[in-house]
Image (cartoon, rainbow, N blue to C red):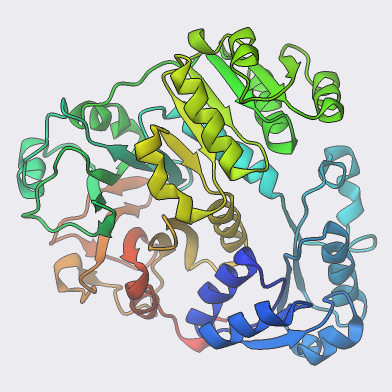
Length: 458
């Protein structure tokens, strides 16, 4: 498949890495020569320096015979014009655009993206994706990281093990024996900063950060086994009333329920816009780091604080300040993955990584039925991959114990028809099954080769 990716920032680079690793022909376009150079030197891709919306630049990028274009530059307008040029001049059949402005995303204007208007097949909104991720985190307060798989029927959770965890110092093999009916798999462990795929004889220790995978109906018992309780979140303080904070507050109002939110926004204009858009949510204009304002928002009585401003350090400090003022649970939006190791020392309970969320969303829309979802863990250290097993895949028809998986790869679950099975050595993977795999970054290419399909599939 020939793909043109417009925008070589973090999202564009990650998408290019995934697609080029699957032997697709990828061309990256950006007006920043340094970003183009970085892409061509680190990935098996071609690079073109220039403005993505210019027809001659797209022509040089191979638009005349491209199958897909992904417009992920920093500008909504450039992304929209790029898709229009790709359609009108080069007849590229599939066009994906990342759009941030809420005005472009309003449902009443969705007619804009028809083929005879502004022809975009898939619109990705990072803010909406991140807002959804924030709601997921709030729904799973025991976890510092969460993502759903298998059409929402299973969940990956990051759990930090405390002193009262019943399964510390227990080999994983013994866990399977003790809880034989529980379909939970420990896919990864981070210990003293290092992430690894555990073996059956490995034990879990206090302070470990474990990534566990389980079907939704097994989540309550899984949390119990790992010493976590499902706390109800009824009072929430949101620091940051921009697109993300507003989307979360709106979603909470729409879904009803018992959660009551208060929003703190520093910009008076943004605060007024948020107040106009919300019906039952109180909006306070001021600095989310101001302890007097946090007290006015009732932070000491709040069940959680969600810090989602456009500045990572402000989010981290707001989370720390809120916890110091008595809030038991803090979630911070963090764009820079190098800041993640500071979370535990600062006492921040959970985080949202917008880049991983956006990449996962784009990949979900461009897969050809084989790899259906990808979730990046940490600083792109590992991935959890959901893939449909096709008849041309080398693993079809094999028992798990007979598949030559790399050392850093574990199977989280196998969905056959509507049933999710816990992986065992004798479980046979058949064509049509959907598997969830954990892979360290260095093993991803080998995993993709195992899932590889014949060229006729495309």
